[in-house]
Picture 1 (cartoon, rainbow, N blue to C red):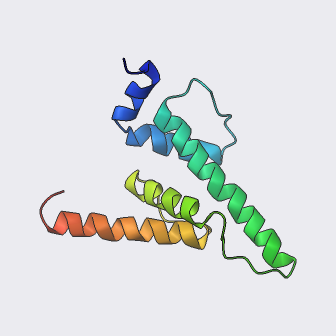
Picture 2: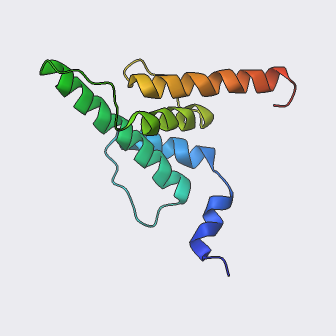
Length: 116
């Protein structure tokens, strides 16, 4: 028997992801009962917002920061953002930008091959 909550993982709702990604920056609270895509959008945006603030603080204090602990998560968040229609933003972290750009290139190549 498949756990009922896993049924939501079988499909990805781009609009719900994008809505929650945007909602994160409007301070709409997370909900435990929210759809999987809705929660993922919130969590990805939250990771990016927290890491961006932490990074700026480290640099302001004269430190050096290359996102050693969170680079992969931020890159993945950028990939998901591009795949789900979140626009590119210069204010994001470098790993996020790299993930967004990598997905944008892949989507372009996919479309050029006539598969999109």
